[in-house]
Image (cartoon, rainbow, N blue to C red; front, side, top):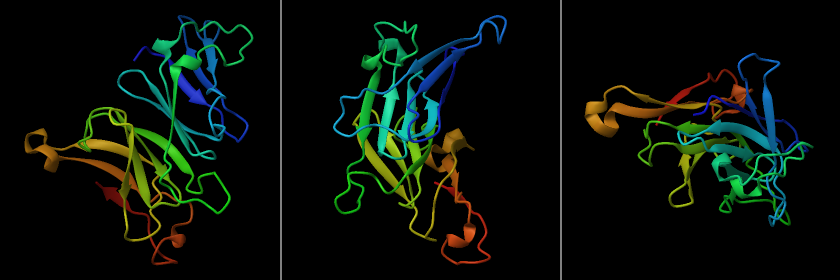
Amino acid sequence: KDGAVWMAGIGRGDKRLARVVKGNNPPESCVAEFYEPPTDTALEVFGSGGVTVDPNGVVWQNWRVSGHFTSFDRSKCKSTKDPQATGKSCPEGWSVYRDTSVPTYQNSTYNPAASYLTHIDYWDVLGMGKGVPLYGNTNLDSLVAFNPATKQFVHLHIPYPMGFMPRAATGRIDDPKTGWKGKALWTDYGMYAQWHMEGGYGTLPKAVKM
């Protein structure tokens, strides 16, 4: 929305969400900001996944290990000054959510269905509103959409063939005059080893039209 680039580190210990503005003469004019999620949550937020930005400029990020889903709204920051780059300058910009409906292992609070990457339904092809964020799961055979208006997680489940693990999701409108029939969310069976899908060895990758 403002020309900035957002990115996140990879790895269990890397919690940093980074914002980079190129300026007039990059790379010399580049300015970076770092932000980290608040630490006053019941379960620590860690294990960064995908990052994407909705039409309002709000950054959405999934957390693979702890199972959280967060939004960061820089416009809510009282200050973005952080000369030591601690990442703690704007706790008020974060909203932290967690899908507690996912089954977990006995005596464990962590989510075994690790989220993979984050996507945005920019054109309301799902009928939940423009800019709804969603992410793929490794062990739930589903895409999970989060409705910011109701604060609810909605599972878009693909029961057959088993082994649906989406790596991508993008909306497409073929005919805006036909309502929901003319638009869809496209995704894929995107795991590394396709033979782990139902059907076994020789099974080919598949595209999915929702």
